Length: 309
Image (cartoon, rainbow, N blue to C red; front, side, top):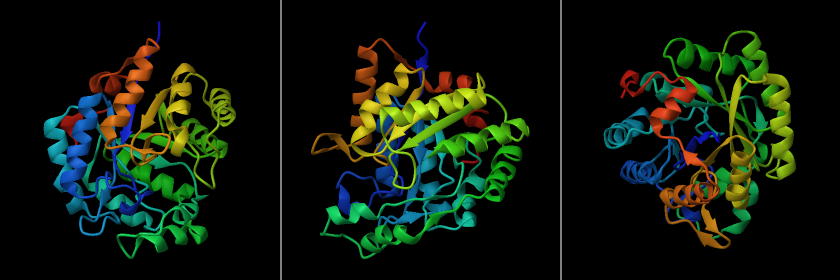
């Protein structure tokens, strides 16, 4: 019997800038509307960042989160998954300020420090809407996304131990899976473990079928039957690698955080469009998308009635 698919949609993220697509949600109203549409299209989980509504720059302001989270919660039953990654150019304290107070069901958690190279993107654009955009991308040439063991343990303490959040463990390379395995052995995290293989970020493993197989084989060896996995593939590999993930027994993440496109040379007009496309592909192959409550049961989440918004 085929497993039900947890379909995550990453609504806006911090990777892309407003100049890159007119369809990228920026304001709280746009983020809320886009997330609600994605949930209606079939997303089980909504992964959310905040943006400065005036400039579109990544934001850690809890006041901005509070402008869209209650609206999404009221309109959908989707699992709300808040970032603890924020932006490569935020401090750990900034990245954790909102989720620590809002106590979501799920949070993303990057499982190590990496070079996070977005600077090649700036060569594709010249007409910038805001002064911060080009320097933001160029600065990633000399910025390390810092998530040390101490930082990871701080997230466990603030969001897991104290608030009951479960984690989407974002693994950008095989060493990050080793870190998950270490904390599982130390009983700092408990099964079921939910891994998100992040493929295609410069500084991490590339978005290829071979890399996905390496990640899965590593997780199988280190974690056995204690884990489930999902895959996001940055850019043009989003749909094919996501489909491969499901065929291999995993789940899938799409959304404008990871790719602005819906096809070759064609911008996606919404997150819902990407959700609808991957859902159509998977259902044609005979798979069924998990409802939010089914995803909650699969991942042992605390429930939307126990969040702080």
